[in-house]
Image (tube, rainbow, N blue to C red):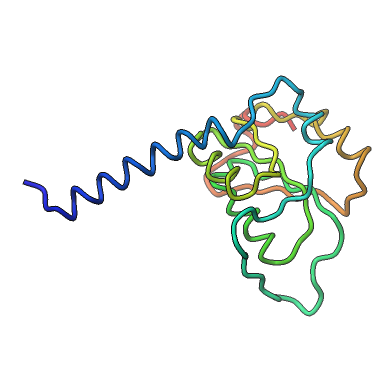
Length: 154
């Protein structure tokens, strides 16, 4: 027979999953607008919850505005890291896990989300590049994922 603590933990986990499922449908707007248009209209990424601690890792902060492509983004840990460094950036996150996308969207609502890396193509970036003056484009390539495997059309 499970202990009271185990039952409470299971109830808490079930409640958390329900909240994430609700957040998945609420936090990620269902829109027919193209990825290119959504990215061109995006706002800079900001932390949507309380204060986020920032660290001064370098003598000079990272300057300029950046476009961050967070491929296989999970809950957008790379975006959190860039925010803590004080970077000013726009972000596109590709993640297939709906709960992870919902978590990232709730914490940082200005990230543009897609549910598969395969949906990102260079042409989707053109309108953003024409509209914004950026210093560069950064992308995340986590270990274990291979651009040569046919999943990226970049």
